Amino acid sequence: MNNSICRIIIGIILFATFDARAEETSMWGFTPSRNLVSDETNLPEKWDPETGLNIKWRASLGSQTYAGPILIGGKVFVGTNNQGLRNPKLTGDRGVIMAFRESDGEFLWQSTHTKLPSGRVNDWPQQGVCSAPYIEGDKLYYVSNRCEVVCIDTEGFLDGENDGPYVEETDASNIDGDIIWIYDMMDELDVFPHNLATCSPVGAGGLLFVITSNGVDEGHIHIPSPFAPSFIALNKKTGELVWEDASPGEDILHGQWSNPAYGVIAGKPQVIMPGGDGWIYSLQPETGELIWKFDCNPKDSVWELGGRGTRNSIISTPVIYADRIYVGVGQDPEHGEGVGHLWAIDAAGEGDVTESNAVWHFGNQDYNRTMSTVAIHDDLLYTADLSGFVYCLNAHTGEHYWTYDTYAAIWGSPFVADGKVYIGDEDGDVAVLKAGKKMELIFEVNMGSAVYTTPVAKDSVLYIASRNVLFAIAGE
Image (cartoon, rainbow, N blue to C red; front, top):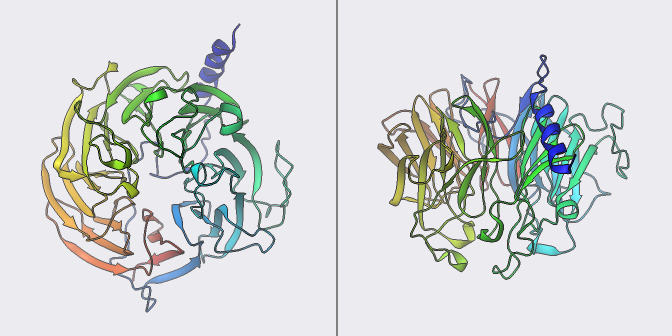
C-alpha cells in the first residue's frame, strides 16, 4: 500500500474519531466557521485607560502584538514579541506566546522562539508570534515565527509535569511553555515563508489544518519552493503529516498570511483554505482533495510588484455563514491602499465555481483593500478595510446600509456582541458602534497605542490587546 493511500485512510479514521465527551475549544473567530460574533451580554459601552474607568486589570505585553487574545480555562493567551521581557535568561528578539490568569491578569508562563538565522525574508524582526492559537482541552496549537507548528500544554510547567513525547526543553522553569510536539515546516516540507509564518490553525476531528505561509524570495520575484505545500493537515495528537496540498504552486503572488476555516456546508464537511494566488480552495478535510475553488479577483486583474496592480492576495479569514463563504481581498499593508473586493460565495458547488457561485460582490470604488475578517449577525454583515472604513451590508444581498470612517488604518476585525460592534484602529482608537441597519456611534476611546488585534469577550468582560498592553474591561 503506497504512502498516499495510507494517509487517506489515516485521515478518514482521525476525522471520524470524535470523542462523545468533546473537549472545550477556543480559537480566533470563536468557532471553526470564524464568524466574529458572540452571545455575550452586559458588555461595557465606555471605559477610559487613563482614569481607569471600568478597567478591571491590565497586563504588559511586548512592543508589537498581533495575535489574540484567546480565552479558555481561566487563562488568556496572546501572541507578542520579547520586548516585554519576562524571563531575564531568554533575551533578544523572540516570538512569544504569553499566558495570563483571566481573573486578575497575573502573568503565568510563556513559550518563546528565537529568530530564524535567515533574517527578515523569513522572520521579520520584532513581529513576534502572529498566530492566534487553536486550543482544545489542555492542548494549545499555533505557528511559531520559525514556521513551526507547535503543540504545547496550556498549563505550562505549572502542573509540575513535562508532557511528551517532546521532553527536550532546555527552558523548563515554572514560567516556561511545556512543548508536546513540534512540526518544522521548513525542514520537513521545504516551505519558504515570506517575511513571517502567521497562520492561526483550526481543528476538526483528529486533524489540525494549517496554511504554511510559503511565498516569494526577498526580491519578490522568484518562488524558492513552488512545489512545497501551501495547505497541510496534521494529526493533532502526534503532529504527523496526514496530507499536503501545493495548489497555488508557481502562482503565489507574495506571501500566504491568511487562516483556514472549517464547516459542514450543505451537508458536506469542508476546510476552506485561502491561497496565495488570490483563490479560495475548498478541500475535503480527511484527504485534502479539491471540492471547489473560487477566484476572488476580477478576471482582468493584474498583479504588479509593490502593490501597484489590481490583483490582490487574501489576508482576511473566510467566514462560513448559511452555506456561504464571505471573504475580502487585500495586500501587505506596506503596499498601501487600493481597490478591494468582498465576496459572498455559494459553497455548495464543485470545481471552478468563479462564474456560477458568486452570490454577490461589493467592491471596485466602494470598498478598499482589506486584511479584516467579516462578522455576521442577524443577517447583517460588518466589515472593515485598510483605509479605515467600517461597513454594514445585508449578508444575503450585499445591500449597503452604512459606512463609518475611523480616520485611521484598520488591521483588526469587527467584533459583534450585545448589540454592539467593536473595532480598533492603528491610531489606538476603539469605536463602539450600534449593531443594526442605522449607523450610530456609541463611544470612542484611545487605548494608548495601536490596536492591531480584534476585541473579544467572556463572562461580560471585554478583552482588548493594544500594541503593548492587554486590557480587561468590565461594565458598570
